[in-house]
Image (cartoon, rainbow, N blue to C red; front, side, top):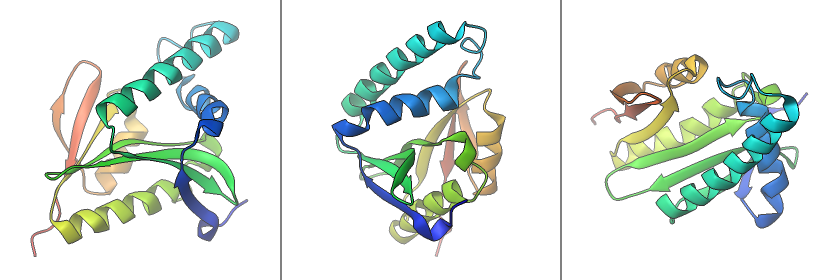
Length: 162
């Protein structure tokens, strides 16, 4: 097992591409539309999705922090955060399934919640509508849904007023 004290963040590099592809496969292969495919086709589509998503994130959030989450110096997830003058956007927080449910995501989010409290600006993020675990996770942290499309819900967290 691991200890939370051994969790660290580092900037993402081009050497992380294989890990990030594996992360997307591990976290998304059970999604509707993917789980029904034969494994080779699912893997190919998810690798393509990872490349497209990465390029889209870099284009839409050029000033974001693209961070790799590590446990004992081994990559276990990604944490992408964009700071703008009016809000903080959590672009992506994902962990390999075996590292979920151990408080790592909560620990990472609490650092962002503290920053938002200090600066008195809201945090925004999006969750795919079928991901009920993510909804529960963010609701426990105090996020509330403010919008919903066919595929995504937009959540918001407002810092307590001083």
